[in-house]
Length: 115
Length: 115
Image 1 (cartoon, rainbow over the protein chains, first blue to last red):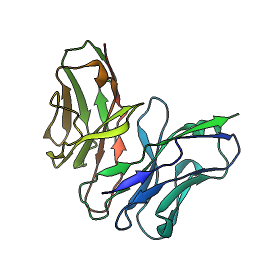
Image 2: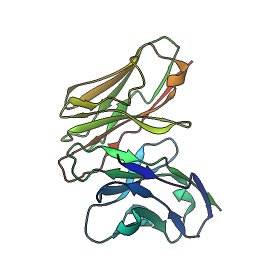
Image 3: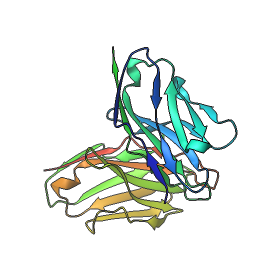
């Protein structure tokens, strides 16, 4: 069965610092990969997604993620964090062979940004 | 497009009462997902539909929970009778699943408080 691990429950960074949020998945083949962000009191919003091709994908709000097949990882990065990036971040995978659209989510990483 | 619409946004009810949560997916989407989010358990998939047919309801906590999708533009999640432990934020999401891995779009959620 698919599983998604986000090893960091909570990360704190200073504004302007770089950020990397980790995500590892367990799956028999390369799945489709997603990062979502949830601001307080809101639903989840897609940041970026990987289907195929270039393993470095760009998303909204200056985020990027890199797919590494050898490490089964899809880590999210941002070179300079803004206070408005404080939110919870979810990594998700989808079975490449599925036509149902089901996503498997990690437990999330809560990001706190210090001014 | 208006996005996924959920109603009500907030619901406060007493234990033992029936609660009905509503969702209107994005037009053209053929998969619909109900999630529950709590601090303790994180984001949980309760049930999902594809082409109005329930595919997997293994996440429904118990028989007090039921969900329907009578047509492509409407779904309900019902809790009867409600209990304080049902207090959570309930999200509806939809996607245009077709084997090409479209992302899920989330509604703003319904915050349910059972007293």
